[in-house]
Image (tube, rainbow, N blue to C red; front, side, top):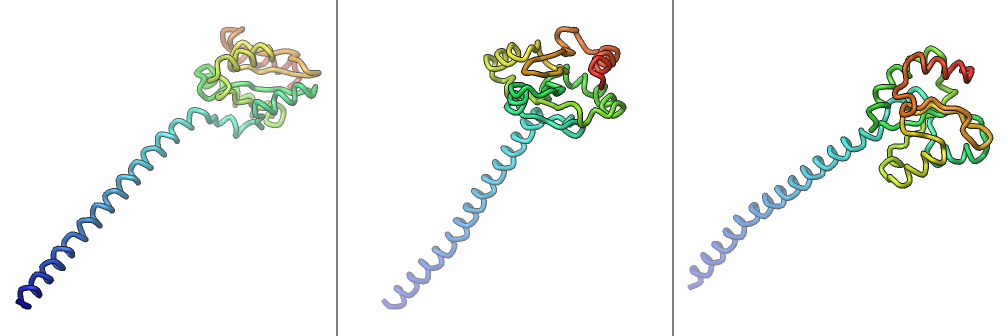
Length: 174
């Protein structure tokens, strides 16, 4: 009888030992699935963020929308390039603009204001455009004494040519 108990105990231990690797395998598979999901979500997030980033940041100093508003309200005299990476017209304009930034040494003279997030809130974007005298993006503008002095607006001009840009730079002695 004791041999039967001993054999039964051995079988129970053997079966328990066989079940343990299965649980470990399942746990590892669950961890792998979680890691794969995290990688996929990270890649999706990176792709989404790429549409909010512009390499114009390498060429110009930047202002947040709030800092832009504060500079205007403070009566500062400054020049702004108002655009967004999600804007096809901005993306078409920037290669030419970058050449002018380099040839006219504009890097420290014009601020980039990225309005991508603001543009996603249609009522806030409409109010911003009205308050700061904009029709859309891209726009180059001079502000002083709390108001817009002049601008070169893609929407108003139905584009911005090299000649338009040269005239605006000359007008502003840039």
